[in-house]
Length: 222
Image (cartoon, rainbow, N blue to C red; front, side):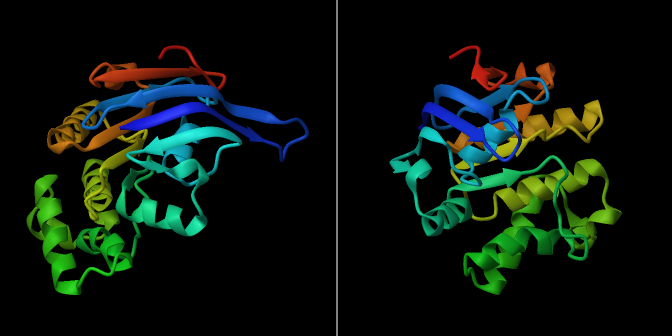
């Protein structure tokens, strides 16, 4: 279970403080495919960063399982990002001079998984997301957008996280490929993995189990 309670994030670096997330509260059960929707600037990507432990809130709490990540130390947050959460970024964020399989192996290296095991698991994950054969040895530039997103999803799964956070996962894809990626993300919840996607695409949100809508940092529904 993910529980967010009275979460607020205010940025003060500009001339006037900007509250990107404003007193937001909601919960997501394990194994749920959830979406966070809203227009550009609504606060949804900031909320995702807070959920992922990439940033700390100004006030309020985020509880994932029995861990209150909003008050954790930097070291604890590193462990959280390495073992509990997997990220899928809009721009894929693959390392260009590494092959697909090497990109998927990388998070396991940081988790001190033995090299032979890393390669075997990376190959299995790429097979699972539908990237097979010699394509696993191609660098990102030699893969289509949909194939790169599959690699990004496999990489997010590398350390067997219980939560997947995806920022506009279909934003750079055509509609047909986007549907494949959405179906793939939804399938991950079958084993209890929680998937939360940030999107402005209402058709994607319609395929999720629950949708939270943000406007000017505030939650319109709960």
